[in-house]
Amino acid sequence: MAGKDDKPIHDRGSHFPKWNHDASQQSVNDIYEWVIGNALTQIDWYSKKLPHKRFFSLRGRFLVLFCAAIGILCPLLDASQPAVNLRLSECFRLDFLKIGYIAFALAGIIVMCDKYFGLSTGWMRFIETKLKLEEALKAFYLDWAELSARNAGEAEMITKMKVFVLQVESLVSHESALWIREFKSNLSSIDDMVKKDK
Image (tube, one colour):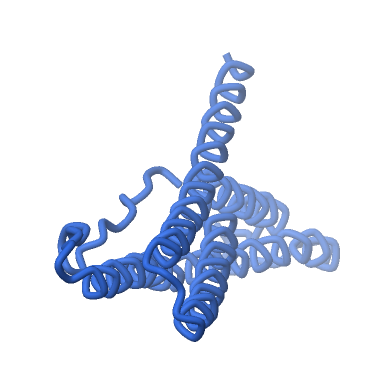
């Protein structure tokens, strides 16, 4: 991946709600809405990016298989030609061996592009992160219902929301860290290839 879009900035309700001592329950509700909005914003960001990753990853893999199949078939077709070789005209001969080499080269280029731009790995990363975010949100909903059922104090509710927000940020940060590590590794691989060619 040559570049990574900035993670979404939570804009539901704009800034983090201020605490109102005269309406503490309302403040808890406002913070709850902000916390849920923040999680949904992150999930929505990954949901919107996933189709693009999936499209290019699957199409790329299909092209690799297609080119590799052509590369394998071409030597067989070349060997099955009559001794005179297949001629489309007197001045042009279909050279299956060269076509096979080109097909294998194209397959290699597509694989390198997929690796460098992180299309397949990015798709898998995004799916994993999105699923974990959704799982964390569902768990938070249940925890919140439990707190509400036993009339938990406001401090305990705020602590639960803090833990959830940090969990969401941790999942997103982990995904970004994986991308950075992969991107640096790909750059190092390219630099090594260039140095070897010199």
